[in-house]
Image 1 (cartoon, one colour):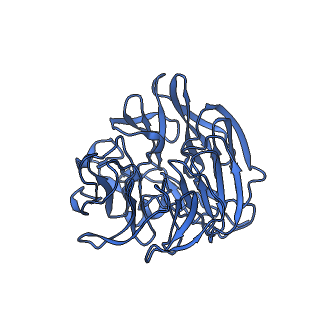
Image 2 (cartoon, one colour):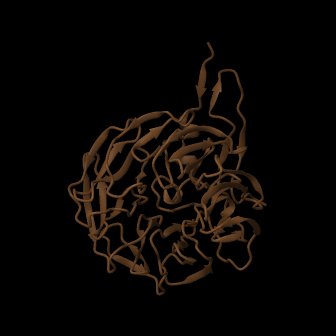
Image 3 (cartoon, one colour):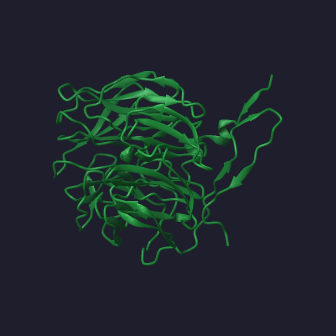
Amino acid sequence: MNKILKLSMFVFCFVSILFAQNWPTIGGKNERNGLSKIIGPDSVTTPVWSVNSSQTVIGNSVFTFGDKFVTARAVFSPYTSKLECRSLTDGSLVWEKMVYPTSIMYAVGFSEDAVYAHDYSSDSLYALSPVDGSVKWAVSENMFGGNAGILFACNGDPIVRGKRLDKNTGQTIWSYNYIVPVGPNAGYAATKTTFYHYKGTINTDKKLFALDIETGQFKYETGALPGDGDQEWPITIGTDGTIYLKRDGGKLYAFEDTGSELRIKWQYTPTATEMSGYFGSDAAGNIYVIDNDTVKLLSVINGSVISKSNVAVQSSFFSTISVDGEGKVYVNNNSNKMFCFSSDLQTVIWELGVPNLTYCGPALAKDGTLVITGSGFNIKAYKPNKPFKPVADFSADSNNIVAGQSINFFDQSSFLPT
């Protein structure tokens, strides 16, 4: 009998290596806090490349692994969407995918194992080959792929709402049944050990809860969190493990997971009714939010305002924030503009007008590449043009091998010495 060898997790643990310079999901990692070691562009005067593609009416999420990125191109008459995989180096097309002529394909994740895509027309989650886009497996899964990035377990298993799937087969490893106020709903986040989401119906209490990420076992939940009947705002986890949840029509809560309960650390009352989208975290754990169209930096200790921007970003429903290795703050206002602020928010380093950016959050990829796509036909990329300390990373051609076989490793480090 052949024995299957799985690479030791001390060498190949996804949460420590995959997120080093790749952007596999919304927010760049399971915590969805947008913090990266990669240093992004400090100017958008001249793109490093610009290519034309098929038309899209909105800019969609960009996910990256190594030298490739994926994004969707959607049109509304009739409503269809296809997936594109392109070279991060020059924007050239690697492959494109529509499973059926009526498919509404959105990218929801990208790892060394697969490009994960959701077909909104059939409510199917697909694992596609990163090489050629061929289907590895498909399962039924209810989500809206436009704003639903999946999560990853340490070994690369995809995690969707209340469910962990085997990355090789798509079979369910564990599941936890619960109801969300508005569906289909993403908004979940995780640490290395724990999956967090909220539950409740329109007319019942909304609560934050925790599951063991390895077993799916229920751990604990909060009491009722006051607010509106619905709940659509997502969860962000800071670099220190603080869990942030803005209740629809209510306060922003910061929770500590003590190992036995979810304890409220502090509460912040917004000056506006809502605080849209995913937040960003700085290296110290302080949190960047958008409140009343102003970007604010809140203290991880007590939620006090450390600093705020002097310009309005005119944010919409699904704004996203990323923070690079120098502390620069990138904001997609979910409408028609991307901003780059200094870490103290006092300086607008650049702003770039792009029609219908929508879901195209600032994905900080290999070598600092920032891919921008809005409505229309064009895709552009920008990079920093100064030398930086290398960010080491590698990939392998497999992590499941038959005993006696060999495996190949590939360097995909950023900012290589010159």
